[in-house]
Amino acid sequence: MDIASNLKQVLAELPEGVRLVAVSKFHPAEAILEAYRAGQRIFGESKAQELQTKHEALPGDIEWHFIGHLQTNKVKYIAPYVALIHSIDSPHLLAEVDRQAAKAGRTVDCLLQVHIAREETKFGFSPDECRQYLASGEWQALQHVRLCGLMGMATNTDDMQQVRREFDGLAALFREVKAAWFPQAPWFKELSMGMSHDYHEAIAAGSTLVRVGSHIFGERNY
Ligand SMILES: *Cc1c(COP(=O)(O)O)cnc(C)c1O
Image (cartoon, rainbow, N blue to C red; front, side, top):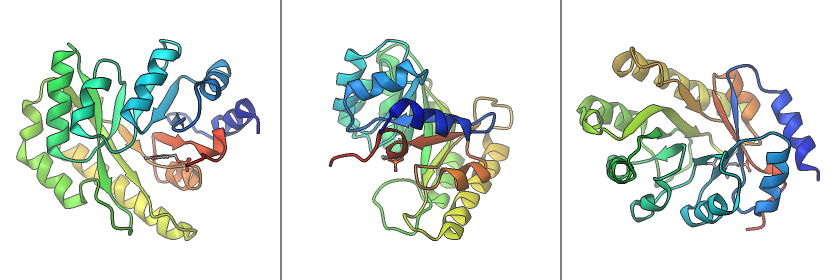
């Protein structure tokens, strides 16, 4: 397993305008450094504590993305440096990110996580909840977060037509809310979708950020 060559293989498949988030959760700092030396700068983590440890140990020009469920009491640890939170799954969480970003004297870029998969999950807005939240205008009062787009995870299935339908649905929702609420906001441009087993489908559906872990770093031991 050679991280640098896996990374190059994935990068070679990305069209212009699609960025790679190398998902390094549960992998040691040494593995991240291997990808870093091969030129990768964006890394994704899903636990605040783990991100904190890695952020302290690794080079300062890494762009850290948070991709997992974020508990509100952990926001304060990552707000000072996180580059993008993909996984805003409730209005309450976004408000807390705003509060902690204000304390840290910065603005934090965020994506709303939308639940598109068939599987039951506790996390994410349904498409209708996403529409309703944006229509509420609540987010417009938040001065220290910037909504940059949407994130979603497809059903974990080998039925790639099903996966593609779900990604197409999220892309359509993205275009709808962009037109309704962010027509003059060039920063609202991110569609975070696609993991190791489905990033080709995600790219075909219009993804701008693919989150690829095991395909680069190998299987996780958890
Ligand atoms: C773990 C994870 C990934 C990466 O998954 P792989 O199958 O290892 O590529 C992507 N997105 C989220 C939200 C994750 O939790």
